[in-house]
Length: 530
Image (cartoon, rainbow, N blue to C red; front, side):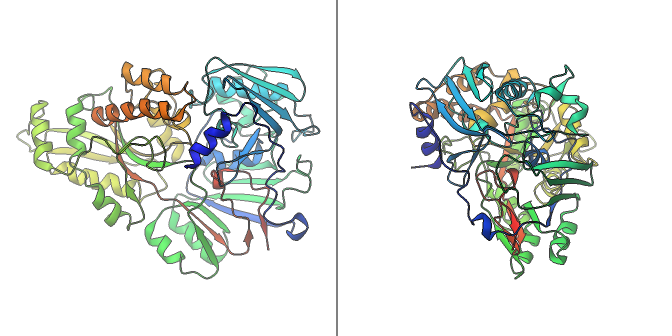
């Protein structure tokens, strides 16, 4: 039985009521040391800390400290109480009742009520790039200050998972409900008022985020840490050196094979691959299907045939990654193996380009194009982009590798659809409804990063995904997703490269390194020093 199956059986219960204590605790409170500053390293710069309107780990790490969510999850995919102490999913899967804790307050002392939950969920529905995550939600009823009832127009098998920290931050309505566009609200980055274990005291884009303990956090005695500093540096090697010198105590989302091998032998550090099960990371090459020559499927297939995934995984990634062939991660129960694949074949690639009308010119070139890449992870991104450039040169395609100064610069380029091809690492986010649909639905072609920035449009795919998103039976859902995967790997709006390997490296002085399914993108209220 898979973890996903367990989760779905829970969500199908007539009344799923939770009364478990929050993370019964890996170490009793009296045994954990209070105080200290945790310095976390990150290669990704962020624009702001409001996870209600922005996805990605750059935002999620601070957002999940600043804003609480209704529920959280353990490392076995089991939902746990958080801001909601109890919850109940209706038998038809069309309503979820949240019973909130009494006495919880925002960082400015105002009480957290069902009105804030209702406001936040509808704000996420309207603004978050994952439109399918809250897509079925019609309204949120608030019969009393501590009860929120989420009403949906169709059964929503991922609604409980959508209550997770990185996906459903609860915002103060009295601040964000002032009519200002939430995506550009000034309180997303300055004078931020949250509901979580830490409050924001400093945000210097591209440099650091400073968070301090919130003494009135609704879980008594937590958090243990006094302060969290997220140090941002696009050079992962500098962050690794900081770990070795003790200047950084935790480095999540580490992927560089050379550095991983080196640090795995350091007696002062621990390394774990746990804590990334929820995100389901895929490293891929995205095509802008609205632009020539990427609009031609045969051009996309030809490009795919120039790429040797095994070489990338073994030589470029040091054996730490595994090739990927489809839009759903292999560990998901919805993944299939009967996919259309594109083995390395330079001769066939050249033939397809000829047939598409892009013959080699007198200068030895067929056409010119660009490839961008997500900054901050050279091994998974820049190095692969450079490899693809070299491979395409062999079939007469002149490729310019374009670097972006930082994540916001790259994100702006992708969001404005100003690209031919781009490397990217994109997450499944636990359920296809949340992390997969957003990339392929034609209704999600938007000027926002991590939507359908490929401009892919297939009515049949829209129908398959929309139908699968309204089914509670996982067997029936899998049948629809199987057809979807065959179509997408045939039409190739994206060429899947590898499953991105992630590790958290931490000082052995750190207690309770986050290893739930959301790992480093979850609250650090249990983390402490020995």
